[in-house]
Image (cartoon, rainbow, N blue to C red; front, top):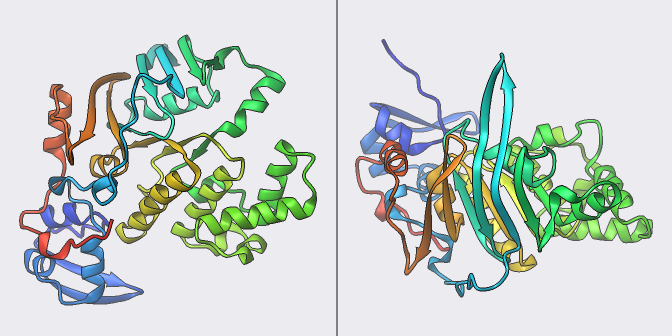
Length: 342
């Protein structure tokens, strides 16, 4: 059987294909044996794609150029989760989506959460957002129990914890312009702001994600996937949150756009002193953006890793080791083409 494998994951292409075609703006810009094309690229676009990759074996991390001061865990956590449980009933069977999860997330920290599809990552994020109520356990945000909040108290909390979803087109109302969407959100949470103040704040947030104020007059379908994700991030930042939950925010993007969005997250973290819960099944992406990493398997946190002295701590749990072994890797060195400016 012949296979035509279409992907933006160059490691998968390198590992699984014999011959590769590099396509850009409707044209084949380079083709040939996979190892030859990726090891010695001739087209500038091919080189750009390779430079945008995050090979797991190179241990790339956003702090490699500007190491941050490690935050001491003696300070109270921004988010504290203890013994959290959530189950769903499916066809008369109980499915435990979150099973006794406990962790802390500190102010200014990027906490990664990785695991296979269906392991409970998204359910956990929705529990923290109070889109689901837990069956048991506690969630505290700045020492305040979230499960006890209702009505006006819960609405007051909403702006402080925001979420960026995997599919920006699905999370933006296609019938509403970006300007109207941003204005409605501010009118709901900041009713005393004038129209001019709301407009100025919308422009400021678009500028923060490198988008023009002219975007306010356009609709979601008029933007590319990367631009829509920037608008989704700007919408989350509009309410000046302290914690941003990012649920697979770059998995649907090609590697060049993925790199720009990840670098944008790094810049926004410093600019707005944000804390991240960064959720993904892509271990290389999570390791790049995170200060600390949690591994989730069948509803449980099974492993924890720290990034210290330019290295990640070794995996301890058998599932983490299996996860590492399953990652597609380049069968040849890409080092000459990976001169990243972090």
